Image (cartoon, rainbow, N blue to C red):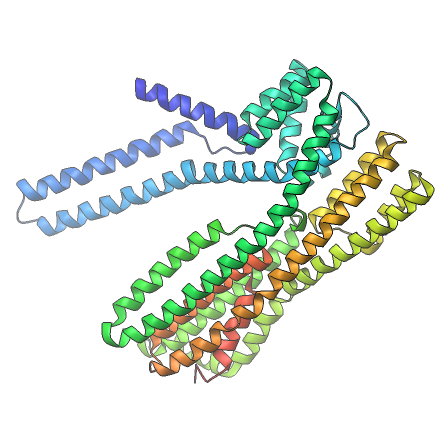
Length: 503
């Protein structure tokens, strides 16, 4: 009973947090969870029972029973692994993502709230404005859920109480501390001064975080290149003495380490993140699938001596005659990633120019029509803004257009702060692109190693696996997306077409 009571308490707390971080999630289905736990326990008991039978009862059917016990053990491990993914890793991943997302969006929320002329109800007005617009909730993916939950709860408890309750359910200590301090300062009548102070602190912290992010990502890429270049080279040299087992073990360890590196690699800062576009996502999947298919075809082709069926013969004819065409198709499917990268640079430049023009217009005319002119200029630059920062500025323009005649002065201060940040964003993007040439040195070194060790197929598989892992990490660092085949395709083509690796 005590164990059941403790489990209920844990699930209750997780469900409360999960309703904030992911309202549509059905992951905490307790009946399904209990069934999986009982099933894994039964399989574990069966495994122990069969081992006991092998040792003390049977002697003739030992091999069959041992096989049965191993099957039961594998099944229990698989079920426990699924259980861990569904009910531990996935919820924790959502909670950590939600916590990080709220803390990323909070400075930009406070930047708007501190510009509000509504003294005494700055956060209340902003939360109502965000929660009443579905397109704005898409911009603030994490804070939008908090705003929606706060507005719905405020109908029954009042804004202050709802604001406090929802903050306690949010897995972010920074947001909880802000809400507590805001409510305390509001009771003293100095919440506006507090918002201005906190907004300035967060604004300085944004610049420092982006600068730290650059050094962290460059260090991760450098260490990854050293690991996935030096270790395969050393292992390939030792394979002559130690055999194939060393290569297989090294390949397995490199795959595990690449997953860990991808998990700890931070993404782009929030302003440079792209909005979710279904078409772009489909193109990325097609691009990476084409790159992975090329890798699999080459592995099958290189191991063709082990097969004698018709399919392998046709595949050999296809690859020998159409390899260049397939490489061109792979590069062609990688074009959307290149276009997207150019688009990000262009959109940052256009947004900065539009903000500068609108700032000059507001300084001269001091009227709200400047907001409409800014929106027109932004839409003229791009019919659909792809970066987060462009959509954020559009929301700020619409928000300040609605509040009062004081908005022109407030918008002027807002523009100055955002324009200062744009130089930081641009430096970040340039430094990320400067790391790209380092990645293209890997296939040149691998080509020489492959010829030195005697063109062994298992060595080639290790080198190509290292290329895939390096390209995924580099894509995560440069494009903020490991499912990106542009870098991988270029590296693989450099490796294949230079030095006669295949033929």
